[in-house]
Image 1 (cartoon, rainbow, N blue to C red):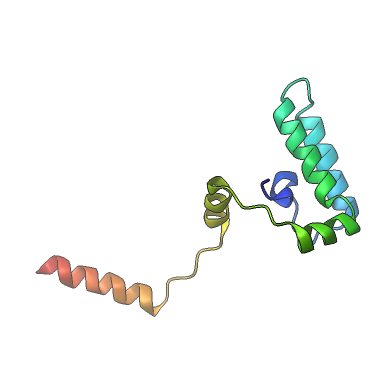
Image 2 (spheres, rainbow, N blue to C red):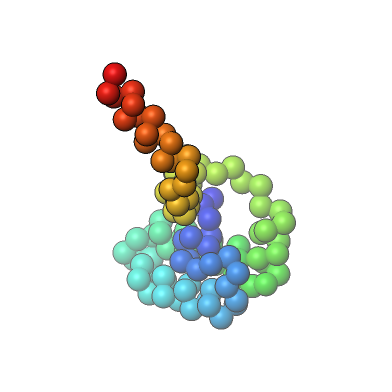
Length: 100
């Protein structure tokens, strides 16, 4: 299963009201008549993190293996480090190597 917080579009530290509001918005955007698969993903995500107790259980006991798509999405969404001295050194090294 993919990250339920990502499916609902909320942060992991969101409260019950924010998660419920995001769930209702997502359900209105994709009723089961239009996209049954997405509706089920949203419903399952809400069931897994909809209450404080469910979030605690999810955070403690979820052992599902992420799919390659989940890993790629997490890498793409991860903040990129600011270029530092190492990035400048590698750029300088590439210029030196290209000059030879």
